Length: 542
Ligand code: SF4
Image (cartoon, rainbow, N blue to C red):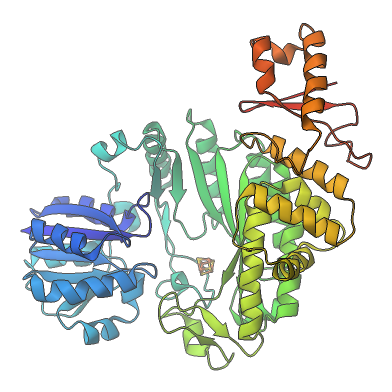
């Protein structure tokens, strides 16, 4: 019996973990299994041809919020063309199976965790009559390791997804993970450690944990982190944390983990107590912000923190407060997300209470609520674009720190947005030169110290190791300054240990920085100090 798993991923570098588990789980059967991974951008004709070439007896497609429209388009073609049985699984169909079956009568839906349901289908040679199948799974510890040796041997520089637990112990009303099972299912810790060692040996760039709350069990989380810390690897491990459960001990352990080994995604969501209560999220915002601040201050790991606009009782004013509290914790990246009313979530059944209107098509994003208007949410979308260009890009770190020291980050972004509208600047621009010119003009417009801002921009240019030379408008007198720096270097090359191994003829490739404004902060660079960038190395000398 030929079984085809078809994944339509959002990007070519993503992969489908669920099908990898299923493929390994079906080794108990005699099924001839093939896994094909395409993307939502693959032309429909190519996807249909891929299915046609395999001519499976059973076609399984996993459906998520990001690929559900692509799956619907595909089903319209495949239902009439192929003779195979078609099964859909995944969160997007698990909670509204009847609606999918109403639209596509030929399909069968596998609701929730799929391993045992799929095995049952294969064992019955697809003779099952039910239109919705939801067999209880064995404990997660009995589900095999998802990757094959062949996959691991070609995993170098790739992202590998990994799951050390399934389910979530919490019940935030907007989240699918809280909907069908509050029971958290943990993989044995020793086994997790073994599997992580295997993954790290593959040379993959990132192991991305898809656990909903990695630090749910603090003791276990610390044990796994200690193990990760001792691995001899360059692999980065991406973990999702609940800020409320970041303990002192957890932070202490992080101090011994090699810098850059971990990457954190932390759901802050809201600082408004009424909002948190309404969505059933157990969290003290002040404590959570303090924990994020402590991890950020270690400056050892990238910290990405999420917010959700459009939650019940969160109006524009209280969202500003939420945003600023999170920003004060200094994460590297702030993801300004928007509430999505996912089918099957508790908030879907409560949407009338909160006056929530949302788009009917995926990703079901909120349009307005009793507390926030469509215009205000649209403005937050625009603020999000500016946030991405100037804050999340990490290319203007000190510049934005300086600009936001006079007001809050949210107010600065609002002010940048109105200047962008006034000056016709495209807020989606990511080009460094264009954004820095915009920031400089903004300073002129605000009558602030343009020379100082220009120093900040040059400092950020050098320290974020941007390729090439400064844009002329930032440092018009750079050539004569460079000449002076080269003279100092040549005179002192013997005494500067950082120059060892670099031939003097290479010095002309250096990019130099020294502040021109008397007001540039000494903790970044003193007045007579010079910072030089050569390839990806930074030196300081006087
Ligand atoms: S938002 Fe996070 S903590 Fe809340 S239910 Fe979902 S996965 Fe669990």
